[in-house]
Length: 110
Length: 246
Image (tube, rainbow over all chains, first blue to last red; front, side, top):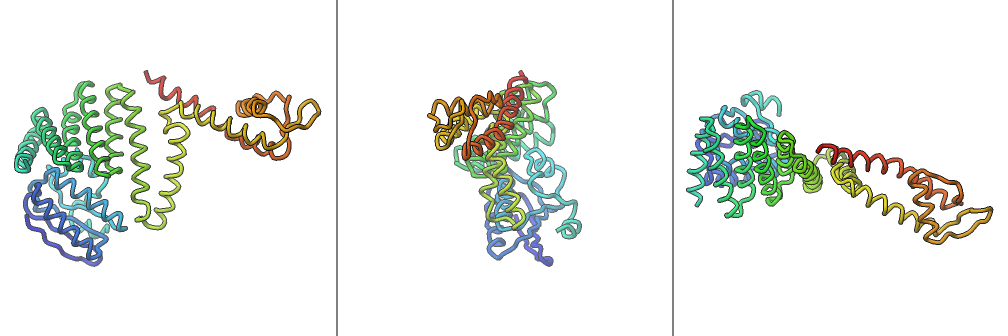
């Protein structure tokens, strides 16, 4: 999995590329913690290039959402394909994390 | 074991996309159990939630909602173990919804209560890291939920109202002994038994009029009467809410 971090104004955009399984979620967690340490408050995760997400990835997202909230920030997700959206809905994560259709809409709303 | 879980999840998600819910939920349950063995509670919670979702998706008959609710409850317990009370609250809420669909009201009652309790705990864990306006809102919400929990267990524990009522009777009786009563034209300091009698007569709004509180006791009586206005209807509402479902 590749993780690319961009900064657009106040929003930190995390672009994920590849599969997000058990091992990759550890890498993603470390990347998120680094972003948090740097003081990021508004974080947007772009799922456009994510082909698979396992429960470890979903659990990491929940954990990051909570850490960000504790820091007074928020987490959003965008460009989620239908199968991943289905997983978000089944696990009810869509009620905790705001999902946007695309990055432009997400950045506008943040 | 991690590789095993990884492959289980990939296959399970494939089954989920093909709407083969039986196969998917079996694999998600196994993955959840493996995560439990590894002590990774948040991941186990998500896997249990996925298994519950499989049951819910395939539920055409009521009995399947029961299984969905048990898996949501398991997910909630795992989320609780990981310290994620917000997710636990949501999982208990969905467990409650599925129990209700299955007409299993004992489970619904328990899950509704636990959902509220987890939400209350989540307010505390995130309290000091919110925006200032949210902190004030959270404190008010936490106080009202704590009071609701203490007074009637969020509407699911009617015996708590009885307990609270008894406590109020005894506490007020103790306060009455510190003041004076007027009975038969004579003012006197009441003993504890007389105070309990007056306390019960006051909280139940019977008010025989044979004893009149004086001074400090008058204030206590007013407060007790005011509390009694709420305690009686709360007890009856909780009792009806809990037992008339069956």
